[in-house]
Image 1 (cartoon, rainbow, N blue to C red):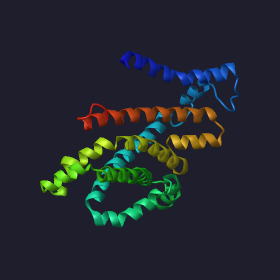
Image 2 (cartoon, helix red, strand yellow):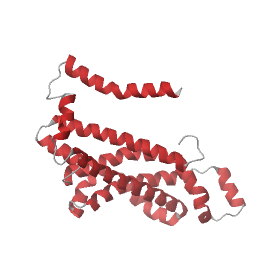
Image 3 (cartoon, rainbow, N blue to C red):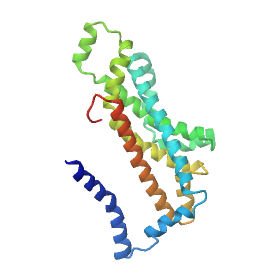
Image 4 (cartoon, rainbow, N blue to C red):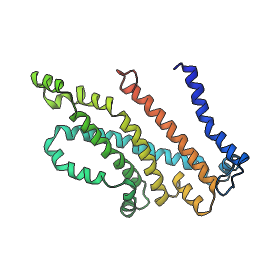
Length: 250
């Protein structure tokens, strides 16, 4: 597809939802109880204290720290599990058991253990991402083509010496879809942690707006979350393209 046509289609996709919004509000006359107007939604920007962009900044910072730590720890853990058979045998039941628990269900425990401290929120996001990344990284290495196993064995290459030359590159090359999926998980964890134990952030804003039936503020927070998700996803794609430079597309 030509770049210009692609950009036009992307722009059409951006304005499609606002057009549907306007149509439902102006033509179908949907009540404010179910759908606030665009004007009322964006007018909330100047009415929120502290400013809505302060709430957004806190959510973004939590998301960024959790994503970076989660991906880094997850990849390192996955490679370690692959090269340490005994460690994998010991930790695998524990990791699989923890992964079976929805991350959102662990929020009350983190509140009891860490209270309203930021450390608890960062740890929740990091663990919620890292364990899935670790299993994905381990599985990528586990599915190594047989020809590579024969090659490494023939040349007598020590497994620990190929961590940086083979294992890390092949994990980075194949784990990109899992990282993109983890972004949605991270956003969900950030919002839930802010819903239950924060005094600032988009999750906190949604919670307080629900209590006061301020639907237009909730819509504004959701729109900002969508923008944050789009920016982060675009940034991850850009960074991954630079890291996995030998691929034309990540």
